[in-house]
Image 1 (tube, rainbow, N blue to C red):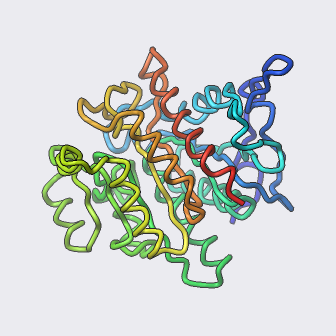
Image 2 (cartoon, rainbow, N blue to C red):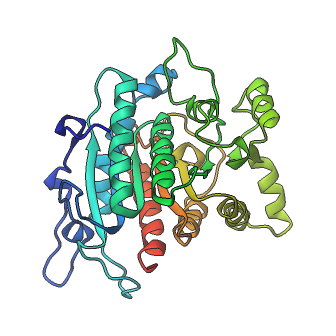
Length: 332
């Protein structure tokens, strides 16, 4: 693991919003202490401000601005007004961002190093993207830490909410935002049967990629089938909860990743969706994830603030993080 300062940078203090007397904000309560030595928190935030992988996948760039923009919105929020949980620097920290460069493989190593440090110092990590390619190094970090902490093989599960399967082949042997789950399966980081692709769209994925997943036992929850089930009484968040329960039972630790491409009506993403899940549905999914102690890694990817002048994409991303935190903080 790379412990040099070159691989990470601290949070910009300007993002740590301060309220008026009697109106405390999360930006005043988060600890930015570094290094994470002798630290044990309930939640640690890390960022991957890089969209080179999106560019290599021929997508719209802009996700490099995601982590800072999400923090700016999140840290303006208050703790729950009903005091459902208390926040202090002993339970909530921000380890900053990995430092991206021109070599995507080095970038991924830096992201994995930072995520491993955060996982070792916290019961749960919230990872902010950045391109979807960072799901791979984040998942590798979870596998490594899970194996070391449990003195076991580190069986991890991943539930990804995304219209895309993201099992493309590498081009020029480089990872990109379309390759993370193929890379993780080919590298034996995850048993394909422990990967749930929730909300995949039939018109967003090649037949060859669908067949590749099915042959390996990847669980695919088709968006249109979820909608049909909803019409007969199976709510989408409830279907998500059922899949997560099954995954938790099969795994030592779990990662939940939400690609904002899955949300309808957002323009600040690499591939905007005309059809998708509502922000309310996604917030409920985030809250469900937060209630499971085995969900040690919660990830938001593909937030590209410069592509959305309204700022709504960033607001939705911050609400998802808050929903996860609100469920997680009360857990011991």
